[in-house]
Each structure stands twice: as C-alpha cells, then as structure tokens.
Image (cartoon, rainbow over all chains, first blue to last red; front, side):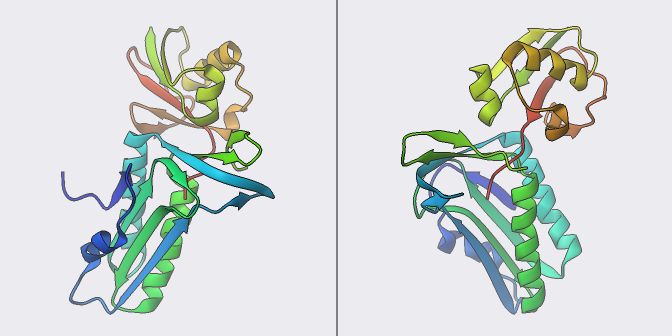
Length: 140
Length: 79
C-alpha cells in the first residue's frame, strides 16, 4: 500500500511532522486547517469529547476525498489526519494541509476537504457536558 | 443466513453492543434494518442512515449474502 493521504490517529497530531509531506518544488503556497476541541457547543458547556470511527470505511472515504481534491483543484499535495479516542478542550481534532503553486487553489482545496470530511467520513463525536450528561452528535 | 452487524455511536449505545451476528431472513439492508430497529429500538428512520456492506457504501435495496458484514451509519459528526 502506498503512503496514505488520510489517516486516523489515536495519539496527538504533530503538525510539524505532517507538513513536510506537502513539500513540492513547484508549490508556492501552503494552506492548512486545524479543528480544535472547544469548551461549548449549542449553548452547553463541554468538558471533553470522544471520537469514534468506522475505521475501514473512514480510511477509504478520507482517501477518496483527498483524491477528488487533487483532481478538482490545482494542488500539488493534500493530506488529512483525524483524531479518534478521548480528547480534551484545546486538543487538535483534525488537521488538513494542502500545497499548491498559488494560494487560491490551496485555500479553496483546504476548505473543500474539511467540508467533505465533516459531511462524509464515518466519524462520530460524543460530547461530555459539564452537567455530567453526554451525547452523540448526529446532525440533521 | 448469518450476517454480522457493526454498530457505532448512538446505535451502539442503544443496542448495548458494538457488533452482533444474526440469523436473518432479510434479503436486503432495508429489510434487515426493520428487523434490528425493532429488536433494539432504533429511532432513526432508514432515510437518515447510510448503509455499508463489507466496507463499502451500498444501496439499501442491494441483495445481502451469507456472511456479509453490514453497518447502518447514523449521521456523522467528525471534524
């Protein structure tokens, strides 16, 4: 199997270690997105959260999204790492990195990738609230 | 026919398990969901779920085969 562009990680994402995968002599632009765990959602105080993935399909779907991005935008490389397991407030939950010859394609592809990941990849968030309750998020 | 089901997120909570093997007469994922929804009290209508068989998304009316691994995926919330 070739080096995957999309990965799930049970340990903290090291952005400095991920970014060199985007290096390309023709690239003049790098855009990235970091999704962080915030302390509130929908008016409720959040203490921590868990991410659960259907790993086999999440990896395939994530890889498909990055392949589609490379066909759809004029980019040189695109990568994404998503955390699974238990995360604390402020933790990095997802990282997207894109390199391209010019900034427009880098920004556009980065935005498109994170939107598609959120919409399509089988990963679920279980929020643990300050009042002790918890709940899986299944957006409409 | 024996099929294996995997459950995630609120469906796993409701079923009280992450996986089960069932002896089922269901011919399609649509029929199988009606069976497991009744058994476990799943509230989602099938229209809100995606279905995967053996690790790939499929149509809900695709025929099932003995030994298939089926997953009913509730709306996702990664990112």
